[in-house]
Image (cartoon, rainbow, N blue to C red; front, side, top):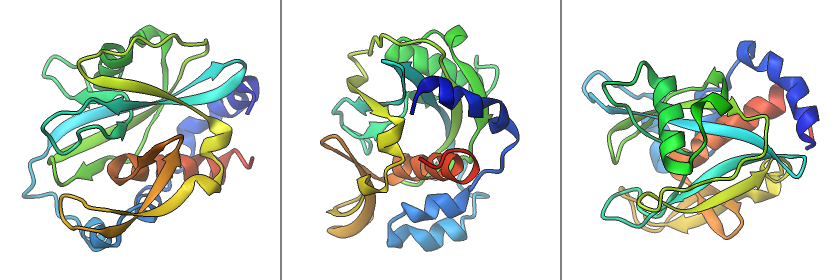
Length: 215
C-alpha cells in the first residue's frame, strides 16, 4: 500500500475498537487456547515489557519493522519480535518504554515516532512477561541502526505482504510446554513467526482489515 494512502486511515485509529483476545486466539496453539480464555493473572505478578508496532515508508510503500533476536540462553532466543523490551522504573509509562527500547534496539529516535494507539496486552507464560504493544508511525524513511548485542537482523515487512492471508500457515514445532505440536504461524521471508509475536500480529492484522484496509 502506498504510504500516503495509509496515512489517510491514521486519524481514525485512536477510537477504533480492538479485536483483542479473539484475534490472539487465531494464532494460539490449541494447547494454549483454554488458558488464554480463562487466564487468571491474580497470582502471576508478571514482569512488564512494551513493544512498538512501527509503520513507515520505504520507496513510497508502507512497511512494518520486525527484528530477529540474537541467539542466547533463554526462551526467546533467535525469535522474531517487535522492537521493545523491559519496563524500567525511570520510564514515565509503558509507551515511554516502547519508544526508549525501539531507539536502543534499532536506532529510531522517539521524536520521530507518533504513537497512535495502545493494543491489547499479551501475557507470555514461559518468561512471565506481560507485553504492552503500541501502534506507531514514522512519516519518513528509516535507516535502522540495530544494536548488535540484541538484534541479529531487521525484517522490513511490506504492509501488502502482511495483509496477504497466504503467509498464515500451520507448522510443527517443539515449544516450552509441548513437543511436536501443530502451531499456527506467519511465514515471513524465511522466518516462522509464532507464539506471542504472531498473536500480537494477528490483532494488528484484524484491526487493519476490519476497520480500515481491505487490500
